[in-house]
Image 1 (cartoon, rainbow, N blue to C red):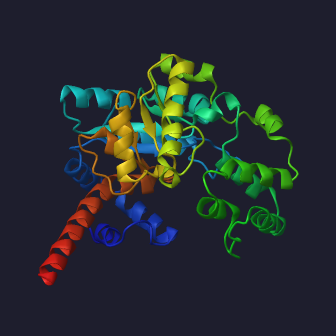
Image 2: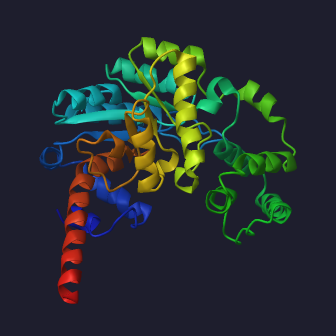
Image 3: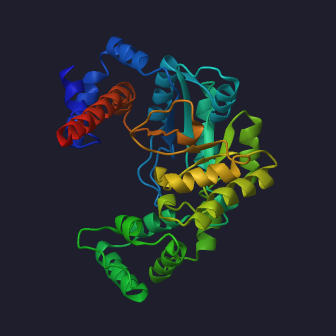
Length: 363
């Protein structure tokens, strides 16, 4: 319990990786305690998020969750939750049914490994999932800007890369990258979403890499329409992940509408099926006012909007559901699934108490 209380004291992963690993290794031995903690926050649906399950790293995405860890995590989830698709969760909400002990497995971006690796393991374990697809990348027609940036960062020497970053900053009048800021971080915080494609394309050109179209033909990182239709035929659920994977909290309303509805409409038309849920890239929700306007004006097309945050309440409103990212380490995933629900409730309670004391002091 000491380790649990120490974890509750902080918000986010503040402890060094080694301390978290030791804590997780210690905690995973106490299955009885895990069971008790799960029951406390089993009342509402939980959602977990993966990106790429693969045994080797790629140049365009960070280190992945291995197939062995993924399989072990899925078996743990099966033993502690009723695994249902997002589609079934929405149907239960509409029917007024409870979502006690329910959990949905999701993946983001629409990588080809959803078809070749993730889905076969899920099928072996007899569980389903929802795959959120970045629609402009469908059939490998485009390389998502984030994947371009990661590939460039992994292919170039640091000195050459830093020189290119400064050159790009001068050309486009961007904030110069700080000495310790890598390309990925710089692009996240200092690039506008309106120019992300142009900037990543220009950087690719500066790097002297093969044409993106040739790279896509050779590597084929994303799902094809045929693969998605086969996934649907095998009982998996498909959702939208915007058109170009922007930070949606940095868009105008017109841009947000184009990213969300453009993705939903394109996938629905291409797949000839009703795609009506969307997961925000990076979990970055737009402002409350913009999101409510989107829901109000287009509730006929959108049944759920999902974030990727750590203050999860997930009650009966699917427009406000959030998901947990799954760690690449099994023990850490057990710790996160068991403890985080309690931690969130305590943090929320502490926050409310702080607010009460603040008001009391003013009065």
